[in-house]
Length: 102
Ligand code: FES
Image (tube, rainbow, N blue to C red):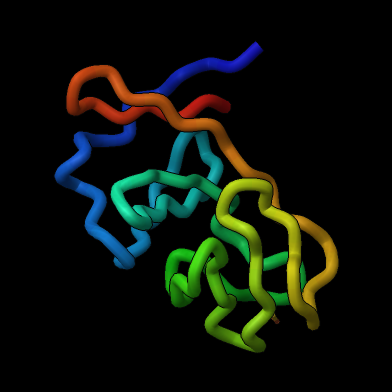
């Protein structure tokens, strides 16, 4: 079962400016795209790079190191050189508070 953790308020998450959070020792990257929030593990599955330092391209984030693209909703690697998915996390909001499920 998921445990929900408060990670901030909606205003903390700005369009196309991913942020990194540590939740129970896990690094997560939070993205806001067209008003929607997404959360992925903040480590590329290809190498030593943080997806929170990547670029949002449509419904994907592009790794800053070798430009693999991961789907923001599913974590799937849509283009190489990464092929393993990153973990995707569920988010929910309660008023302006944002929670992540781990
Ligand atoms: Fe992310 Fe290589 S480290 S694509």
